[in-house]
Length: 416
Image (cartoon, rainbow, N blue to C red):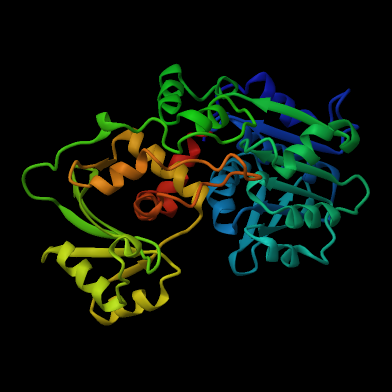
């Protein structure tokens, strides 16, 4: 991998632990815009510090999941380390890296901090340092447990993240308490990444709007407010394309008391079109439907087309089982709401998802789907969200297909 010259801020990350004026700091925090060059220089600096200052010690590498950590950090970092003369051996089954350099050897364990139960995974280990990539996506209990494990003399903490809301615990407990934490804080913009051209920076800026623009392009810790998809209006709606589609899928948000929403999606030339929908509000109709009736409705929506996958609300266990018994290939949807909203917004703005004029209930919900401004943290109002949920399930599903493990590495390389 060939490097362009590091930016001044990247060079500061690479040398803070040995530079006059900052080497007395016990932690470093790098936040800011997406694709701003934080991740690679943080990882490279962490390994250089660990191998320069310690031998025979244990370190932690943390991401929201181990899979995300390998994709977002190690997929690019490890080949770079090899080019610089580091030797490493990975035991995938043990989530362990053994790294050798300059006659020294250290061990690095990989941890995922996806929920409150994750703190137990790191409990009990003694660390000389820990790097937490995308720390704002991890629960406080996991992060605090990881920090508490760093009891070796001279141990240090390394944090990177994109901003969330101003009430987020990490912002309040770390960024607003830098001196108390004895931490160095560096805020990154896309201009701090010399690998990005002005054209690419403009393209990323077009991919976000509203709250997400302020967070991921401007790098601000701001509250979510107003409509979730504030850019979406009638000008984004298209007629159903004429001619044949290449592929077909269906997405489902299941409801008994609440409305049920199904979307029929057809793909042509790299674009997924929501060409038809089924929407049933049992309160308005004053009658609840059974799983069997909903399965019949799904079959009618499919209309004899070759449906490759039905992406379904993961909480609808009995409906999923019934569909499988009827011969449908069912995929349980990923239900991380905030990540799903970001992916949906990005695919809509890129034109990779298109809502057709035949989907009146989805179009109606786009105009009504709002952030809950009274909630602590980012939450959407649980109103007018049923078509929004099935569209979100679908967006995440096709995004994961497009950004599979190898494609994901290629995409992530452009971050640095």
